[in-house]
Image (cartoon, rainbow over all chains, first blue to last red):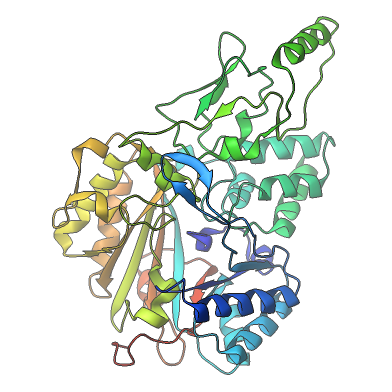
Length: 205
Length: 271
């Protein structure tokens, strides 16, 4: 989830897109940290995220050989409903896990969720957009889905292919969104938004 | 990534999943990878489930069906005979995988990902305090890719401004001289899906830093995604917001918020 802040779209669409994630600075192997992550996953799962923490977010044993090491549970969840995010923030505050919690999503809404839980946000990062040789960029629809993965693993061509298949009715919106979410090893692609974007592209013909 | 030509049936299923768009069907009717442009992200390998079919049989059936203008297409995430072979990489090509494949850790820092924790743990580390600004410059994003010579160009333009390159960032580890932003010569031609130059500067210096980034970006053969972060004031307002807007940048409606629920390492950190 390197840069989930670069997700693109109209404000009315982004209001259905929140990535809540836990991060720890050092000492990840300590028992109390493992317990904090377990509690985090328990709390977010209770509110039925559109994408749950994935169990397969491991690393390779050796950089030279593609052989995944034993999986380490992920610590992110993607929501498409602001009311759920408000409840998650309140419960995470009450749980006092001691680890860093971040949310990628509409900044004003997240600030309000913090206020509702009785505290003020700590730090904020804005995206200032894409610069450089923008002639290389694909269409807005393709970019909106591509940027749903923080590591950019959802290729431009995969999005184009899914749009074509959806238009030809060879695949359903849900099947296309599920396939597009799969390359994202962090599990932060918002399938609800992916379906909305694919549907919009289909209607445009 | 390598493709075993003895197993490839030329169905082309893998082509759309390549993050760099560099898999193609060669003159022999089988898939090939442009290895100079491949960033070793392994996305094709992970997305293509081997179907375990006999490649000769599949080719024969496809050819026969083609003669009567019919076709048989496997599901789009299937490689009929499992033709993808992740290669054993040698330095400096290993860098392509460590920066581009989210499951691969960095040899130099042991940390996965393309940057560091940046503001994600600012509530614990206090890395960005009052008056500080974090700037993240992700070259290659979204979905275009970049070579380390592009990163060097940006870093060498920023270094004279006195910015601090994040020491734990894997790009910083590739610099032969952190005071000038010069990268090791042996890595310059390597290409990655994206990577993030992370710097810490001050609000006062931010206009000059952003102008410098803009100047370099206009000359780059690729794109970059830019982000700016700061620690909020006690009332939750964002110190960099008005300044960046006045400079003519459009601030994103969405972004990343560190809620501040982590326990600080030291209460005396600058606020």
